[in-house]
Length: 148
Image 1 (cartoon, rainbow, N blue to C red):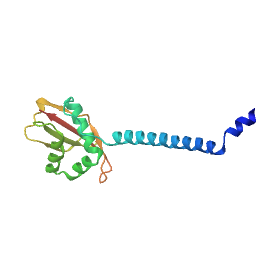
Image 2 (cartoon, helix red, strand yellow; image 1 turned 60 degrees about the horizontal axis):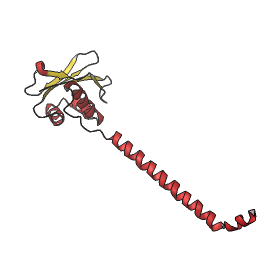
Image 3 (cartoon, helix red, strand yellow; image 1 turned 180 degrees about the vertical axis):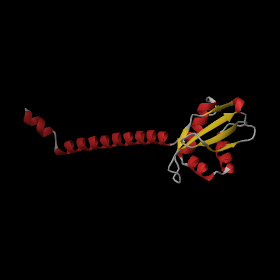
Image 4 (cartoon, rainbow, N blue to C red; image 1 turned 135 degrees about the vertical axis):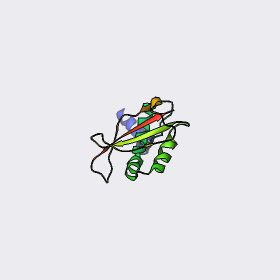
């Protein structure tokens, strides 16, 4: 009786079963790759912070966003107030003013820049943010204070 069952299964049927399994494996692999790429791209692209957060946290997120593409190090090295104004002004909500301070590792003020209308009485500052530049072996400590 076992020989009758073996005769019913032809070599063509066996090959067809392997082909379906191979196609199924390829489809599963493609789905896994697509999910992995989607997860990676959502983690790799960083969006600007939302302005409805606490101002201190928001200031820290602005600094980390500027540092993510190397812009913050270039701003520090350049000491260009118009570049600082453009870069930070684009990320802040309408009507917000700011003060950017750059310190040495021993907390000596290297330079600072404030926008018009900045008031320390209504300001919230970021956590100290560590930035390293290629031209300076010592890192900088940067704080950003925002007032509305």
